[in-house]
Picture (cartoon, rainbow, N blue to C red):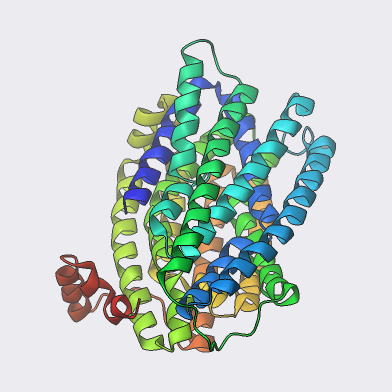
Length: 453
């Protein structure tokens, strides 16, 4: 919770500070480029972040420490190839289409900065998610999640940028260089923490002689990571396609306005991120123990808390979004209030459905999650482009919100059908009373799953 609290604060600071340092057209250009960088950083991981969460959590249940080390070694080799390949493809695409599609200026200067940042973010996120798989949630929460990668890299980035701003007016290239510095320090911290955690886990208990899991091989790792990579690809399409559509069909000023609205939407997504970050490694853990009922209880209770928090924040954005954007980001951005209100409705639907997609992925049904995300991403790209030409950023927001709600609903339904585990929020009086009592102690909040861990 502390990590996500810092994430909220760092994201809010970035939303307030960065637009004030750059002119609206320049910030619009930065928004477009960062969407490409974030997309590529996720792709560079090749699905290995959540794949390692699953394999490491399963191995930890059996105290199979040799499997933990082998998972990390194989994943590192695959990550090296995938990240370098992704950086090369991204550099080529930016060189060919950066000016035409994303309206970037000085592409020759931006490409090396973007590629460096992609590489750092990919490795840092992988290290942080590996920590999550080993149940080291404290450092994982500080190092991963959020628009820029996590609260620690974001706070470092903002601190460096503020120091630079005291000397002269930052530009896009200076802003990216500051972010590279923050991500570089965070990568070093995450690697040191991962090494220390692996050593600590290996010393805690004796390796179990018998295990129900077969030896991990490269093909078995790729069999999971490849569908996860495709799944993450379409997740990132869902999260960035609306920005790209706006960059292609509306002015830079409108892109900047819509980009600020999307940044505030990140704040609404924090309760969902908190729920996913907290329960993610527990999903394969409890499945490996055969405790499906306890897992459903954990997922539904976390969804209930998430829905309550998200709905409260979304209502504030619906009623006072213009005031919020004008006060924090400047009066120019108040015109994005309608887009923010529409996007907020979609986020409410996502929180009510719970973590169906990640439950599918962590229980070996990643292919089903992949196809759902593929279908809704295609819908967003087609319908969003059609709407943007005629009605502007409000129409883009409506299509994006609808696609997110549809994706969450389908993942909830398919997860229930395939696994027998339902993930939606539970507002029955008995459940709400249990949650109210459980807030006093986390053991009651998670029920039997806490004892299982």
